[in-house]
Length: 135
Image (tube, rainbow, N blue to C red):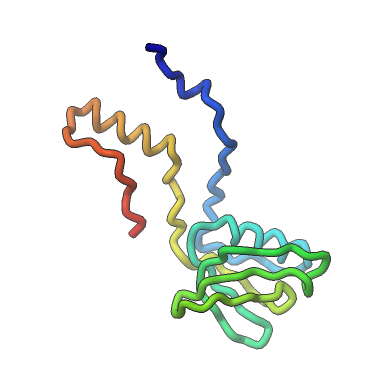
């Protein structure tokens, strides 16, 4: 039987956790808005979007479309307080805050494997392949 070397397996490149939990980006230019909303899409927690009319919506951004201008670009989010799906135009956003806990921070596959082998080396029994709770 051939031993598998995980360092030689084909893997998709990961992303670096930027530690943006709690960040309130400055949205001074169109590029600032685009960059912040792209980061919000990659973020695995809730964000609070403030619209130019003063309405605040806290929720999870699950989709975005980057058009040629802010008026043709939008994000789609699941509000924390309802089951509806909102579509928000980039041009209508006045502020953005990364308010929710980043559920993916420190949860890489490598970290999980390291923890598994540490438990096994310590002699812990009943090791299983169940994910940790996000709560």
